[in-house]
Amino acid sequence: MLGLMGTPAARPSPPPPSGRANDPSVGSEPAASVDPPDLDLSVVIPAFNAAATIDAQLAALTTATTTATWEIVVVDNGSHDDTLAIIERWAQQCPRVRSVDGSDTPGAAHARNVGGRVARGRNLVFCDADDIVVTGWLDAMSGALDNHEFVCGPVELTRLNPPWLVAAKGTTGTNGVVWFDDLFPFASSCNLGIRRARFLALGGFDERLTVAEDVELALRLHLADVPLEYVPAAAIHYRYRQTRAELFHRARAYGAGRPVIAERLRIATGTQAARFQGARNWAWLVRHLGLLRTHAGQAQWLWTAGLRVGALQGSWMVRRLYL
Image (cartoon, rainbow, N blue to C red; front, side, top):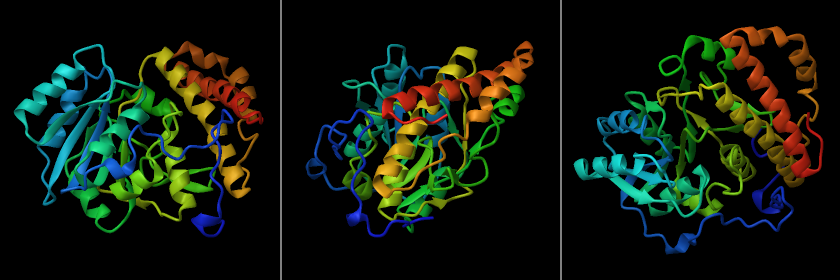
C-alpha cells in the first residue's frame, strides 16, 4: 500500500480543514535552530494533569535497560494539578529525566513537538503519561530505529482497564499495525518511534488537530514513502478513559478526526476513503438502546454514538459528508 502515487515531490500538500494555506511547520522554532543530537534516543512524554498516573510511567522507564544512550523529556502542557511538581522531582532524582515547559499552547501535539525540538537523541520515541511501558520496550524501540525510520508496537489493554471496558472497546492495535481504511498504516502517538531528522523535516505533529494528529503524521510519512515497521516486543500497557462522559467525548473527537484525514488523503492522492461505512451504525444505535442498562453496554453504546456524532462534526468541518 505504500508509495501508491509516485514520488513524494510530485504530490501537493493537503490543506488544513479550515481552508487556510497549508503551513508544513507546526512548531514555533525552525528545525535549523535545533542543536544536533548527541544521544541515541529521546523518550518524549506530553503531560497534562497527569499527577495520578505519571509516577508509574516514569518508574517503568527509569528502570529500563538498553545499550543506547538516552534521555526522558517530559513536557508539561500547562497542568493545574501536581504534574509539574512530580516531573521536577523526578528530574532532580534522575539525571536522565528532563522537565520541559510546553504550557504556551494547549494540546498534546504541541507538547510532543516541543519535546522533539529540544530532544538530544537522533531517534525519538513517544509515549503517554497515563500508560506504562512494558519491560524491554525501550530496548526494542531503540533497536528498531537503528534500522527503520518509523516504528510502532502493540498496546496491551487488560492491566490498566476493567474487563467490561476492554470488551466494549475491542482490541484494535493489540497485535498488529492499524490501517486507515486499508489505505495506509498508522502508529498511535502512545507508542511511536521516528528518526528525529525526519520528524523535524516534516514539521512534527499538526498542532491544529486535537486528535488523530498521529494518523495525519503517518499520512505524511506514507506520502513520503516511509514504511511503518511493527515491533512486537515494544508493547505498552494502555489506559482507556473510564467515565461515560470521557468515553463519549473521546469517541466524538476521534469521529471528527476521520473526515479531516480522509479529505487530506483525497486531496493529496485522489484516493477516496469510504464515506458511508458508518451509516449502518445509526440503525445499530436504535436497535441496541437496551445496552444502556449495563455498565459494559453503556460503554459500547456511547463509544459508537460518539464516533457517529463526531463524524458529522468532522464532515461539517471539511464540507463533505462522511457518515
